[in-house]
Length: 473
Image (tube, rainbow, N blue to C red):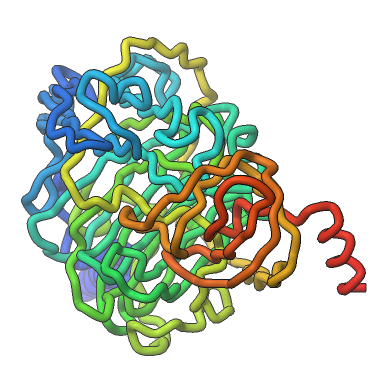
């Protein structure tokens, strides 16, 4: 009897130790929303057009999950924001972008219903790069309040010619959230350096609050491949805090692409009021498109998600609201030198999208296996500091059609003087200026208007390139 008691006590102690070391938090997460676009789920009518954009909801009930659209998180509303950046109506917005529910081959190799999300041309520049334009087609959640942690996952399939459309170097976000003016999280695919696509995750204050631009941290991940033309699972979790327990965690197919600790509440303590899940937005050429399926939203790490590590507390970083030396990048990140487009559906209005009659043939992908074991700690290489090769007197040319502005600002109110065609030469006469996440130079063009241009869409002329090489040598 005594031996049996000892065995039971030993077994019980092992169970308790196992529970205490489980990767699942003690307070189990609650499922807030789940849908694979099955049943009566369809696109609603385009509405609330306001000049340069419109809105469109997803409606109907998913008979597999039991959830109905509109998706609602923390109260509030959700819909597509068809931001064209050109005059449109409900009947003409479909000339630029559309959203459909299609039957395609899904991530498990069988037929399924999925959301097809597309932009065929921008409002400014047709199928060419829009430069610093704001044409985009995101699905936006507009929470009525911020009520704690959040975990979001969905399956995503990017167009097979993604690399071609992102050459020369450019950006394409797949997820984003913004507060009411002081903090933004953005996860994007970039081809900076004209190399294969890689992941860039940034925490900054580009949330349309009129603040001088600050980048708080950045993770550049070139280790986890960007799946092109095949389904992959995207996951994101965040815990908002002004202290060291703040956390942003993202994974692709179970592989962590960023796990950042530290303050993620802005100087105004503003709540999250826009979640873009996903965004369709790019500085590359058009058309751009993607498929989305099996969306889930939880109020914490979901149970049974073996790929998700348990939170642990990191050493306290610098105070919130300051540019900090990120533990992920190992580099000070108070800069606007990425040149990425950062005006993401920033009108803050409700959103919706046009139903395209086109049907897309979706080839069957190989089934994707999601890792269930906890991944090893991510080794992230530090980003290379940007070295300015431009200066006053440098000869440059535009690398795409580019809006030239009266001031160094991408705000809606900034005066667009003209659009210079690709290859337009000129000379830099002022700058640099840092604004809205961009580096700007004032250029005196050989013809047409003169004004401020984003550095990302400028390149050195042959003569300037030779002079720069000589200076380096």
